[in-house]
Amino acid sequence: MKTFHARSLATAVFCATFLVGCSNESDTQTSAPTPSTPQSSVATTEGLLSYIPSSSPYFFASREVLSEKDALELIERSGYFRYLDEDLATLRDYRDQVNSSEEAMILDIALSIGKELTALKTLEDFHNAGLKPNAHSAIYGLGLVPVLRIELHDESAFETMIQRVLTDANLTPIKKRFEDIQYWSLGGSDEWPVELVLAIHEQQAIFTLLPSTADNDVLATLLGQIKPTDNLANNQVLAQLEQRHSFTPYGAGQVSSARLFSELSQPEHIASQALFNAVEMPALDAGECQQDIDRLIKRFPGLTIGMKEYGPDRFQMNTILETDSALAADLKTFAANVPGLGQADSLASIGLGLNLPVLIQTFQRYALEVQQAPFNCDDLQGINSMWADISDSLNNPMLLMSAPAITGLKLRIDSLFIQNYEPSGTGLLTLASPNAQGLLSMASSFVPQIAALGLSNNGEVKNLSPEMLPPGMPSVSAAMSSDALTVGFGIDTPAVISDALKAPSNSEPLMLYGHLTDHFYSALIPFAEQMSPFGDELSGNELSRYSSLYKNTELWIKADDYGLEIGFAVELK
Image 1: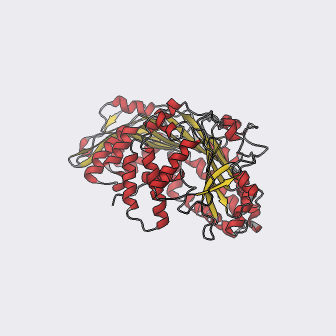
Image 2 (image 1 turned 45 degrees about the vertical axis):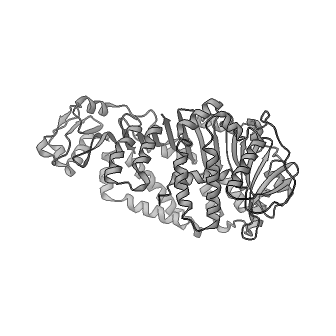
Image 3 (image 1 turned 90 degrees about the horizontal axis):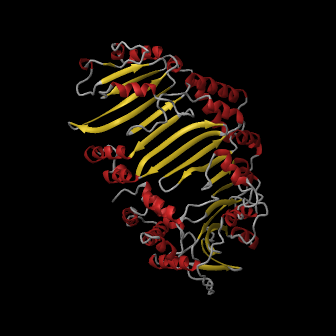
């Protein structure tokens, strides 16, 4: 059996999303929906945002969308539909092995949806399926209950596509109607007290969860018949979020720690109340933990997500763990400058920039704070133990001795290949230090050959004698400045090492940065095929796919005024 890898799982989830509101039960009503005709969409930006309450514990929405042309180009260049047949073949293999009837039903739905998606090649194909390649969409919480809204091109065509999928998957939906909205549901039994719902209304597909004990007010709220008075369409919450973090209007959102915990402990929204009633669970009783929880919420007020770039050739998503101002200020002191860190100037690279003495001092201060004011809640005792362990680890003599000597490193891979059946390559290792001479002395105690180079901080490149190297190892050269040491492996041009030593740091200090290019994926293919070091999860075919799709991928961690940011960017071919 082929490996059921993450991409195939994503295929199943993506496909099944279209039909979360369907089941194999018989019709409960005979009424049919009123046929719709293509029309101007009412799911405009303001239309979608008007359903999202300003008090929502979580949301992600966009104020603008790409043009249909750019959206189609992005879909094509991202390769999702291009390789859908391969992913569906893997999914079919997995489907043949499952024993659970519920899992088999979900996979049947996913495969049927996938069959429809493989036919989407042109804008006309999307429209014939009732879809828009650049649809407005929003996901948000009505209390704890999630709602997903997606703009449609044509309700009738979308429903026709849904019916084809159901027939192919041998399923019959439960159709229900609330006022003028038709919807399908799955669940609502003693074993499954929450219904999965799909509704089609006003040129939108609406996906949500409906507690089986919910009354009409809850249903009307979830389906949008009752809109919140204070919503994202009539205030500047989303625009301000974009401005604060330099996000584009193509997508941004947040999770509020305070609002989320409030709904868990003292549910105010009628949807949250209905959910707790349906599952017959009491709301969370904070009790003696309330003060500790408030302490954590104050320190970590939420999570923010947004797109800083979004187009047919490149996109960038940033996730920010928001912290209080004191912790944010401390985090900003951790980053240290490392020559070349943040530059995608090779096959691949990975690097760290950390001011270890400052980091150790700060962590010791926080450990002392927790020791002096420990968390009292039984469920949070792990935090006390964690900080005690961190304090012990930071008192390691080797760490305390080496911390002042190094503030970061960057490993740069220039080439990667198999030579005489052995892995080989060329690249550079740069070590940053406030005292490069001290770093050289420390490094020499572990690698005596470095001392033989006789380096000084004038940047002169020197070569290590081949006699001092193990057989088969590429040439080694090095150069040193007052604040960095660069060692080259298999680099025959001294200027390459000099340039790496003098390379500027990123304009914003980074704690971590890494990148992978299409050439790196290509270089790994012989390793995967001949040496199989990565197993089935990273086969030659998979690497070839990545190489054909992704020109460059980047990942970084840095701190700003609002907390800790994790960034991810992809440049498409």
